Image 1 (tube, rainbow, N blue to C red):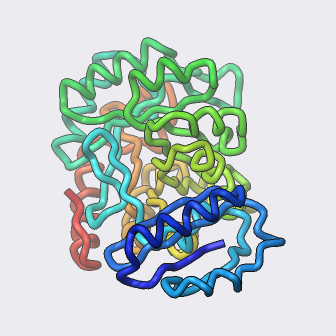
Image 2 (tube, rainbow, N blue to C red; image 1 turned 180 degrees about the vertical axis):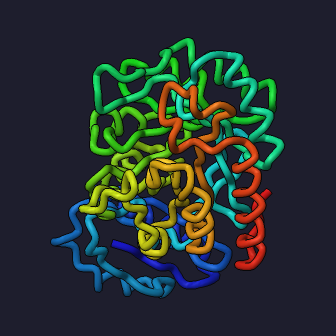
Length: 338
């Protein structure tokens, strides 16, 4: 249930209502905008007489929420959420790009790529230390050593880092090392992991599952917010369809749909959607035009030697071309790409 207070409502009146609702056993999530205040009421409201609230003269409207997701719902939080990733703000007017190798292979590799993507305009350094692979015989990442390499490079080149977490057992190490924890597509519905991430305040990058609906994706985000962590960024990375020309089908339509349904920032991973470097730039540009708040791109200085996903990794000069093109599109739609 959503309660909208009239503009100019006194704080003591708002607090009075909040206390009454909490005494009835409801959980209250308060959203204070520039001119209005909204209470998101979580709990079983089916037997509560919402009309009785109009006895308070400062109540503007009361609305029951039909969608199963509550805290991620834009009705609960009308303003766009802006997530602070160690000083890099995601979800505002600026478009943020994360870039780096698919997998951390060595310190030399990461420290070669990091300054190249930074000079092109990437704000966050990406790299996988643990790699979930379809085949058990494929390169699985270098593990904890890779996180140390990534953190060192991020500090050296003044870039926060993002890396994928696969197991609850690794959470303590990730929290102290990684600025943005990525939940990969295969773990989108790993509810045990999502619950534990909800107990932290570290920003989470939640990728869409390979064959999950938008509602299922938002419900996974709801798990994290329900635990108390409101620092969630959604990442569209393509979904599985009948098409085989690309690795996945990038669901561009998910961007405006998410913007309507939720207040959470949305970034796009065109590298995994395309599966081939030739298509990444076009998909990145389309994502920016559709309203994405950022991109996450795979870049490798020697993709032919990459241990993971070299075929979809951009060389640094192609990444620079992508950034130049996306800047022009961002300017055309009234936004800015640093």
